[in-house]
Image 1 (cartoon, rainbow, N blue to C red):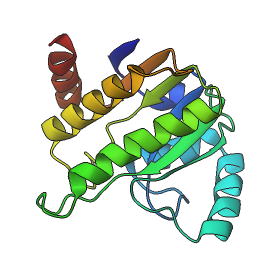
Image 2 (image 1 turned 60 degrees about the vertical axis):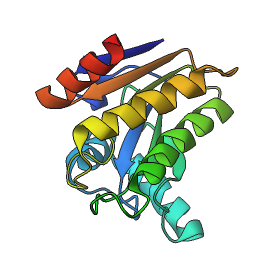
Image 3 (image 1 turned 90 degrees about the horizontal axis):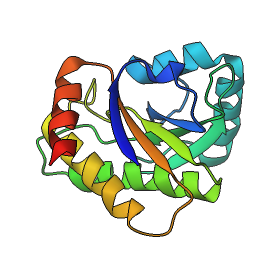
Length: 170
């Protein structure tokens, strides 16, 4: 039900991939930029419509768009926290980002979902702590009735991949 791979999230054929977005949802660097680039203009068009309504996406929340040109049918955009030393509810916000994405996936009857390593790039969240939060949040969510059948953690770098493999082996 939970697995980890080392690779490019934009290449996965799943129901939904999760985008570690910024609050504007209009693309940026890292995985966000890669998803917008690979997915094409349809994702950006839908993001603009959403942002017109809500102004910006709060950290810890999630919204959904088409997958555009991606193999995934949908993109769930969520904003993780910027790491500021751990005293500004960063762990709670990161957990909320994963939970919001999972709940939205359930609402849309998504069976397979792939997550990047949210907030561990430019947002600076410590990788090991982020992986513990991600795995614990997903495991706890899957203990309850859900439409989700498979969760894939997609690690772009070798360090995150090693951490996830270690934690999932426990």
